[in-house]
Amino acid sequence: MPDFQKQTVQWFPGHMAKTRRQIKESLKLVDGVVVLVDARIPKSSSNPELDELIKNKPRIVLLNKCDLAEPNATKMWIDYYNSRGMFALPVDCRTGKGLNNFIPTVNKALADVIAKNEEKGMGGKSLRLMVVGIPNTGKSSFINRMAGNAKAKVADKAGVTRQNQWFAVGRGIELLDTPGVLWPKFEDREVGDKLAFTGAIKDEVTDIETLSCRLLDVLAKTKPETILSRYKLDSIDGLQGWEILEAIGKKRGFLIKGGEIDYERTAVMLCDEFRGGKLGKISLELPE
Image (tube, rainbow, N blue to C red; front, side, top):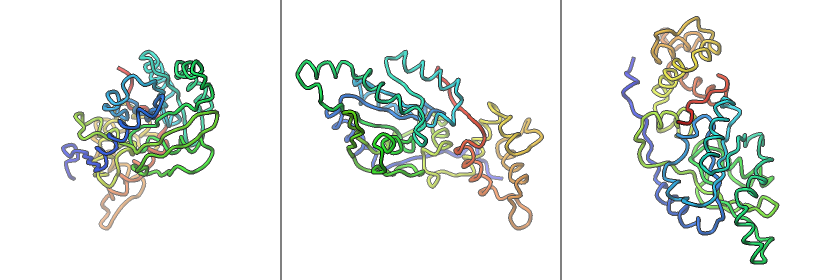
């Protein structure tokens, strides 16, 4: 069995520097910024460079995929963002859950901008917001829901949006879509792992078996009952990730010639089921 623990998740997107420039240049065109994060990993799915880029622009944080995260953990994150002067909402952009609160929240977050526009006699001026987030956090699904059409490209794979696009979403609000952007290097391996677990990093540039073993290591420590329940295992006490993967493959009958476990098939299935919420509501990090 290969040593999965020593392998590293890597990501080298070629369009990243260009996207940073686009965001920086477009900031002068907008009144505020909408940041989408994955509710399961709000910290890891927040690009650390955005704070420097956005600076003092009003910010609304959407904790997307909230139906896949633990409600108590999401509540803690909402309180965390609110305490730092940001507005935060739990949403599910696929179903539209929570998005009815978006426009009222925009009006609160941009109250000063609205007041200044009214003072200048421009009370009907549209509010412009830039939508940012790392790949696969749901920016296009959010815009499609708000715009009431399917003009923004949507996919389950990371990295679909490639250039800036404007969308009118009604009630005097316009959204600027931007490509998802990751950062050049993950200083913390756990950040890279969490992004890969949730699909923010393309599976094609990771080792899916390494990934699944690390995911099982994490779940075995934090949510062992989810593994036992989903895969009908009696015990995983003391087992390493690859041993649990082996047990799952055996239980599911994922075998190849000679009776060996088909690790790749088992790994793909595990990651798909985790991302699809079939292991239950799981949050992988909490506010500090």
